[in-house]
Image (cartoon, rainbow, N blue to C red; front, side):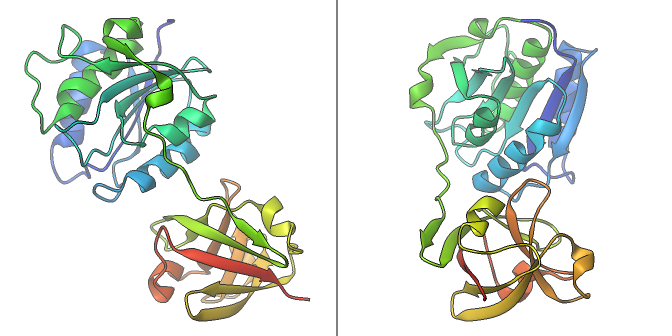
Length: 271
């Protein structure tokens, strides 16, 4: 593998503790020349789905890199510690709990994988409660230096890797029901639904939609941007990651309407 100059890093560690800084220090001791790009360390604690969605959204905008991701509620348990080579030639390092799966698909799918081992390519002592420091960060650093992935551990079949399966939208006549997959810090609600799928039931930018969540129903404009509605007005739009989102302009749609990832919402074109 050609030497990589970047490691992109995502976790649920937050910034109040030393965890992120310690992992960055481990990387720099092994590969001083590498540049580290922090995607976020604000993933909700233990929220694998949120981490996987953010990672998949961000990867296309990152330089060619080794991707280090740690959201690991099963740390020290039976789940594997992985390095994955994708069809595009990029590497992902992290736990085998589905966190890496959506990003791997964005990069062409997994081509090969190894289970990371305690070795000369890990820290000398691996703590079962902080594999992000002791296994994952060293592996990412060595990959960035050009070490062959196969030296990091034994091969595992890619068909057996844990994969997140996002529910596909259900189209029934004039309406489509989709699953919410992510709520950002503004309270905007992203759904696993594309503009093309919404247009399939007769919706168009500039038209009105009937949107349902639980027992609530709203008439909502389908717009291009937040400026198309007044402050505190609800709206549906195609977000910057080409997903349909539900929002309140300058408000918190998820908080106001109690919408969480995994909930379902139904959209019907009006007129």
